[in-house]
Image: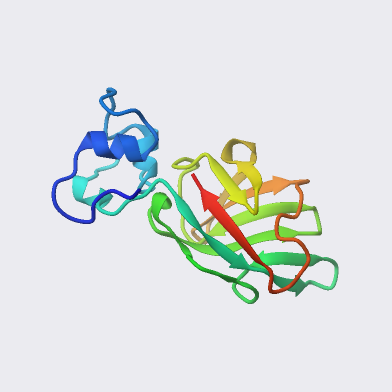
Length: 170
């Protein structure tokens, strides 16, 4: 459940949304709380930045297929497939560039068009297959993008173009 989009907001509500317990000691600089809006440690923040923040992201992918000439890619990319929600609230509204399974070096990859910290979520579930953030290779590059890659994983999208697969991030 997202934090309120207006009105009063408090640190306890932020902590609960981030997965912490109610009434438990916390600070605005705790990584789970900062992760709700994709902020780094020690940076300036205002409570108003948390309006509407959510610890989760969910939707569905209509599977597209891209043939690279060497291997197939399944899922959603900028030129194939579709996704119901391209904005990940709990990563500071980062925009999804792709959510794919690639057959080259088999693996699942989540790419966002922003630099975001490797925090703010624990698990990505695609069609019943769980991918832990801590099991992924995390990388960023100079063009302001971030990727999480799970090598040697199963293809959660299947091979049928047009199939609809649900996902959630917690």
